[in-house]
Image (cartoon, rainbow, N blue to C red; front, side):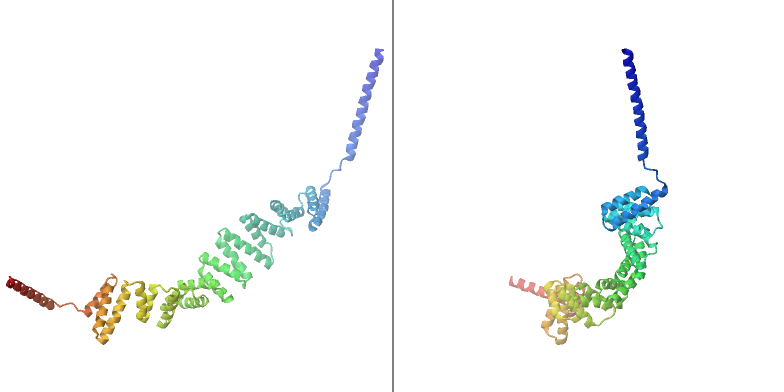
Length: 401
């Protein structure tokens, strides 16, 4: 009985081993049959190109999810395909994924620096770096673009960006260098000519700045902001007539600007303009500042107007100069008429002027002219009569006692 049982167990165990072996062999065979064949480099390149084609089509039609699937497959098949990297950059750029777009565009230009897509990739990179605020990287991108044979319009665009970026970086000499090239490309563009003028002025290139601003005025005679800067430069360089002409135009444009009138008065004096011209300007200035005592004094000097002197004395009764002028007015009248009241008035005003330390000496001289001081002989006589009078008074007093 026992031998039969043992024989059955052995038979069962052997059967299981055989069955398991057969199953394992079958499974391995099936796995081998289902396994994909190993791709050659040529096959990978071909498949990458196929998926790239599909991805490009989806991207063109704005089917972004499908485009990403296809382009990702293309990249997985061949990570040396610069076109795939470029279109992945475009995809993420359109999706506003700035960091991913930058990464893919950088891979694109790294893999194929001479590709026809390189210029476009750098253009995208420049704009993306601007958005990210990475000025040094943006400058590098736009400088590279300048070396890739751009059209005139493209070069102007890149130069515009470079000028702005260099200004923001504080590199004004480099900004001026690129602005000059921009100016050569667009000589009739007032914006660039103005930029060159301002940069030249900032970097100390005043001759160039002056020339540029004169060019701007020729292009637009109503550019009064530039004209004002130009007028200041003319005045600083003692180009008096040009400065006067510029301020006359500025005054005609803005008659209420006190500074323009003040400069016109100063420049007119240097050019020996007529008294009438000076008075006209002073009157315009006084209309703008009716309580300006300095203007009133100047007008009183120029015109000798007693009304103007009185106007000033109402503002400053202790003004030595105006009191002196009033005294001189009555002194002149006294000299002509000999009227006592005129000399009295002259003395009165000169005495007031004498209280001002600046006019004390002048006023005293005029007082002495009206009432000359006593000579030594007159002083001795005066002293003699004083003593005689005193002595006489003493005699009278003793007599009364």
